[in-house]
Image 1 (cartoon, rainbow over the protein chains, first blue to last red):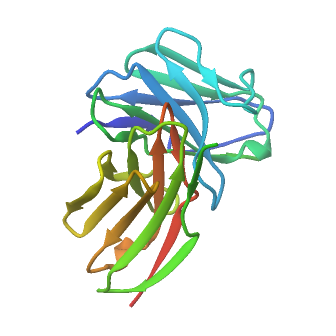
Image 2 (cartoon, rainbow over the protein chains, first blue to last red):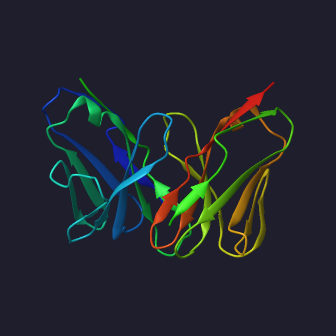
Amino acid sequence: GAVVSQHPSRVICKSGTSVKIECRSLDFQATTMFWYRQFPKQSLMLMATSNEGSKATYEQGVEKDKFLINHASLTLSTLTVTSAHPEDSSFYICSARAGSEAGYTFGSGTRLTVV
Amino acid sequence: GQNIDQPTEMTATEGAIVQINCTYQTSGFNGLFWYQQHAGEAPTFLSYNVLDGLEEKGRFSSFLSRSKGYSYLLLKELQMKDSASYLCVGRDDKIIFGKGTRLHILP
């Protein structure tokens, strides 16, 4: 089945630094990838939709200059959290849909802790 | 507006059956999903309904009524490993997540 590989699974960074999270579709081409954030005991919240070769579409309230998304190829999308602060500590997950399949395949998630 | 409602928590006994209900309001409709999410892990796909009726997959079944904006996930022969959050997810032009139902299984 479709697999989305997400790295790193866990990262701890100092406040003010930047962190890059990668998502790769391993056996399919993903023209669109979705980035979510999940705070403890809360639902997944869509942050942005990443489209290959064009600018990402951000949801209301998500700072595009803080959460940089690059989707340079059909198999790779990256999310960079710039100038991270403790309030950015969260679980970040990407997902993609493989062609006409019904389900959205999720990456394994990245737990970001900003200290 | 767009809204997905499901109970926050449920408790059931190992070996029993539990039904998790979901009501949705979306501007359009392109299907409804159920996902299972264990704490600290990514959601995993359970089911997808786009037509009315019941879809059965082993111990898990999902039902949809589009006219009522209603779905349920039925879990049979509950096992301890079924303790997780179950997300009802609607899709129109984007996917909309419910807050999830935390299911506790008692031995």
